[in-house]
Image 1 (cartoon, chains in turn orange, brown):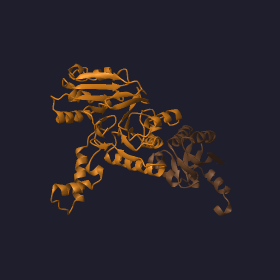
Image 2 (cartoon, rainbow over the protein chains, first blue to last red):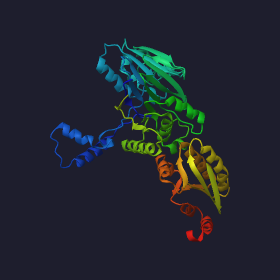
Image 3 (cartoon, rainbow over the protein chains, first blue to last red):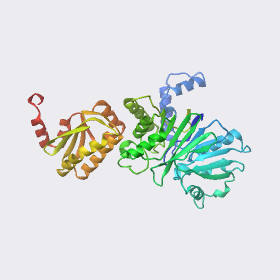
Length: 319
Length: 130
């Protein structure tokens, strides 16, 4: 495995920057640049690079879609949120429509935000492409077919002319996909969700989203610690604050930054990447959560430092 | 971990000591249960003196949330006081400082809840501390 690339990082619902927010940022950036002269694009880019991420960038608004670049010819994707549309366009731009590709797609669960991108995933419409969709839910195929039924969508699933196969994964049983070993794990979420651990060439990545943790259950905690053990990167559902996750949003099926740090510290993980951001959060709010989480890691660190990031659409993590 | 407690009129002050983590949270939960029941029965308050708490994990914070829910269901109140800096940061990062009243001192917390308890608390202090 070479790198992780994020195409969609938002939870529950796609969101977008508004015109008002873009305008505010332009005004702030222009005021900040007052008196400066930019002799070249490079000068201007240096200035932009010095701005805060929430001033010069954005976490983005596509729903869950994460690419794991294996170094092999096949594509590996986690979830079919709206982020799979730009992923598909990028793959087509790279190879062209006449060059068949294989896509291995691992589905955490079939809630809408995790499957809504499939009808817009252009490679699935192209004969010759191979799309293997993996999951542990018995209703995986029917759910994907149903979302394209009339009157929900005008293009029926049968119009997807790629060679589409569904592969059932038994939770806890390692499964070989190319050079990778993939293991799924049952997670607590309405209708169940599954996390995935990907291992290859001495590297390991865990994708664990839409997963609520029962803090008082030591057996469950131990099972997640074992699943995360020594992972290079854990992509973790940190949608809520801990206070919300155990009170007004208990049983909503999501976790928090605090639990992410604790589990990753116990498991000896190298890099915690917070994911499935609350759609009500703007960029400043996610930045604040990131700063808080880094501080929590710092004040509770007992061993090696845990790198902490907040995923954004377009972010890459080298493995 | 050990938890001692004192009663001042309708306010119970509980003082746990040590780390509240995955190993010890159940002990704190067991220690608080009768104190929560006592404060609830009097529609009073439970003040947690955290001066002796070095660290609290998510499991420990969950214990506080359960106590808060139970107390509020009985129209009783809860607060934490005397937090060590690390614990204060953990409460802020977890947003528990928005759920629990946080006070710099036990006296400050009691003062918010009950004049009778405050008088009892002050009376119990050694003359030099008054």
